[in-house]
Length: 540
Image 1 (cartoon, rainbow, N blue to C red):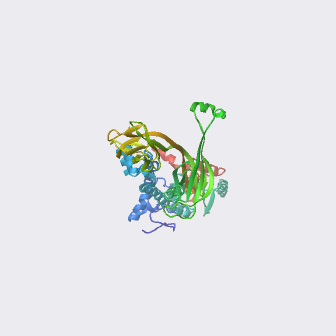
Image 2 (spheres, rainbow, N blue to C red; image 1 turned 135 degrees about the vertical axis):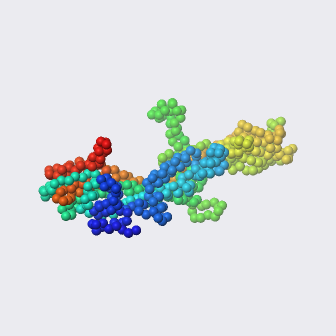
Image 3 (cartoon, rainbow, N blue to C red; image 1 turned 90 degrees about the horizontal axis):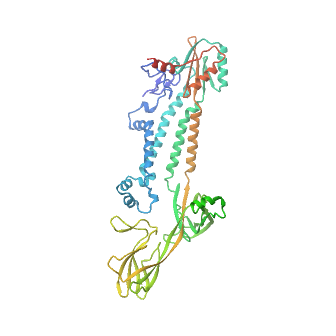
């Protein structure tokens, strides 16, 4: 499409409503008395001009503010739905089993729609990307034409442009002293003054027009930082449980770091020593003073073959407390929780008639052996093990998790007089003999527990991007909220002095400023034509 040349000589892009240079109306409206829409200076926006190719249609779709708002609303709704049920990272069982087992048909639907791992699901990332694309296209569609129009504006403007400004007035010819006084007052108000053929354009605060687009840049950077979190290694927020005396690999480090938990310490306030907390202790019973894990951080030396024990080099000893994490090479290990966990259980094989013990065995609940030889022809086999036992809806035994919170066993007891063995189901305070009464039983002898420290391993390489985006966003908010773009035109037209003014907001402020500028001159205050239109409508 061809460009449009104005009578002033300026060549405007196709679709321009007002000439970028003189302000003459290029696309004539039916109502010539209506005030000019100065929102984008009448510039040619691509979304308002082209709508033929597939690229035009995509551009026009994403340039719509309504589309951007709806994308944000849909994303917010999806984010809220992701909080209804626990995310997959917080459950122990396989997701396809857990959600249907715990929440029925709703849980199954929740899993099938991908809400179980919402914030890293492909469609959620697509929504975030679409919001980013919308912000980019919305900004380019408006800011580039607006910048060109403001840059090309001339001092002398078309009569129709001045007449249809909201603030406009006509005065008789003014003296040179009046113009000098006006220019002096404008300079005192920090206006940038341009003159052409005896006409004056006073302008200030143009930079405030870029505030919304600076906001968009900040939001785009903020969203980019959020998307970076889904790139492996950029953001880590993982739970790590380590028992006393054990060493575990630090998650998301590719086996590079290991953490050894030497001891967990739990301290309570003593009301005899800590008088400040005496009332709280009397009310609550016990108030925790300190959660602490004495740990050692190791770093792997070289590479090791699969299944080979890694060679570790000690990095440092550290006492991890709440809000005092161990920090190394961008990783932080926080003390987050603890639990006292069942570690070992002891049983005795007993003859039910004579109550005589035929031997004892101790089962490591984390790594139980399948067979225990008690000697003299007596042995015990573990046919099945349920670390966190419960009965499913169909009556079959199952486990809620891999953590030994409520262990249960199916034993086969082999004895000289029962070489084929007897079967017994044994749980805490519960024994079931599924094939009838047995001659032998597994008698509970004792239990051992161990402290388990709960850590959160965190690494955030995206935080600086998010912070920069937030700072730029706030700069845009301040830029657009506390300043405004003001322009005042004084022009000689047909032996008269025309005064017009425009601002992108705060019309009361610019009218007060014009009063100050025209003080000590014979020039009259221009009128607010918008108020006249409102009064006329009220009269009708």
